[in-house]
Length: 367
Image 1 (cartoon, rainbow, N blue to C red):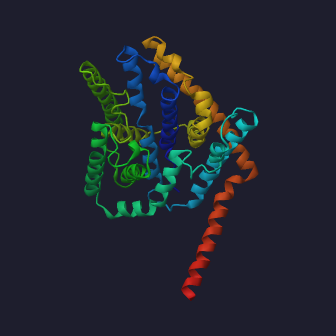
Image 2: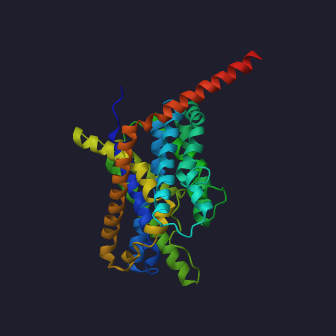
Image 3: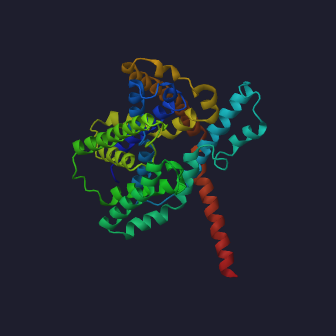
């Protein structure tokens, strides 16, 4: 039995914290509350850029973990059950407590169809990507190291550069929030699972991460500053997309940094594994559309008005608070599902579907 890579669990937990930080700054109103080109503006948007590789890290982890393994639909089914629980459950609680007065029944009903209505974009895109995993794995198996590496670099540059430079979406990647982009990041993770030999030092990856994020931030700030002087208004989010090549490099460096992380303490490893297992639930809780609109929207806008020295600590603490509360809710959900054996639904549904599929195939064959 292969030893579990606890570093990957640590990265999964950290990536979700980074995603929470992005939502605290974005939906929370911090980014909109800082004055254009002020010291606070530079600090906040630099922190945003540093955090931005989190989604790519999550997708790369999928490729690293799933490559070389049989893709089991029971896992997706269990994710759907979890997603439905939060989407419908939180909506029902808010509706019954009168928090959704004035909301149309049509909008409320969407909560009961989380994937069909794209309630959570990552889940919908992940399911789409999951369907292609056997094909993606075959592709990685069939390609030599150099050819695969060159192909991935070409894909990231060809798809990412036009989107980044012109701040448009010519390839309909939704700036990286799409099935296609998750598939590309999956291939990156699978590449490192198959070919990486761990010869590069941790220090190199750490420096690479800092260079990729800080250079992106400095370049963005410079372009926005010059543009403002000639009367052109550019958003602070300029250069901050999942498909930006430097953001992809940052994600790869951070992934490799944690992939090679050695955690000797068994107790610490168990804690990391458990916290990592809460990650997806934390996303579902804090980024539920109604939680965002009722509680998160502009809740942290005051941070942008604080001293430049206080902005980052306040963002860190605020994100930690949201992360912790959502984590407690998810821990309770996990315990409840375990007691009620709801987490076995995936295996049962998969078995029923497999038997039905086999039966249909047999009837077609006999005809």
